[in-house]
Amino acid sequence: MLRRRQLILLVLLTVVTATTAWRVLNPKQEQAPDISLLRTQEAPTFQLLDQNNRPSNLRGYLGRHRILLAFFDGSGGPDADPVMQRLKAVYPALKSAGVRVLAISTPLGPKVKPQCLSYPFPVLRDTSAGQPGSSCVRWGVCDETADPKRPPTLRPSLFLIDRRGLVASTGQWPRPESSPQLTINSLL
Image 1 (cartoon, rainbow, N blue to C red):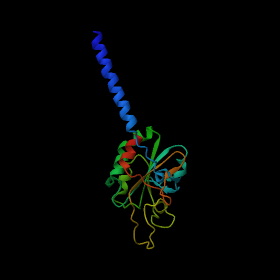
Image 2 (image 1 turned 30 degrees about the vertical axis):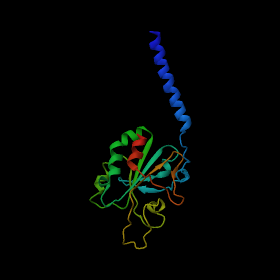
Image 3 (image 1 turned 90 degrees about the horizontal axis):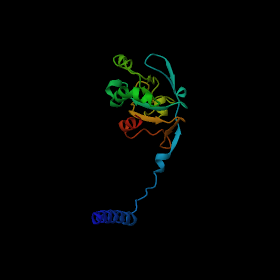
Image 4 (image 1 turned 90 degrees about the vertical axis):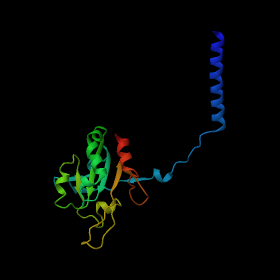
């Protein structure tokens, strides 16, 4: 019986010694943090009308909640955007986790306005999208348009704003999340 225990202890000692020797000879490679990912800026504020024609101001959320700010193209409506559909589906869990959701689109056509009424969070309309100082331009998701007859092209984007009101930055504009679905899942 003693020999069996000695054999087991010898095997365990050998495994521990071999593992320790391997770790000493092959240390983990430390990666320097990507400084560009650490850059933040204050979130550009706005006040826009929601789907019920009530004003919604970003400042009212800052300092109290983390915020997911989703920009989507209003021409297809929110139901045509997979990020908007996901946000709608998981909103109760996000709200329980202390995360608030706001969505902003270009002006909505009469056929897609009813879609917005089924969303449990504010769906805002940037009626001056593309004009200097509009929220879409200030967030860097659409370019300024010189021709008011040409509608702006909005790049669907998702931003995460922390409780302090800071958002990741490219140095010039807020930086959208590279993987919106993963960002949403990480907050649940």
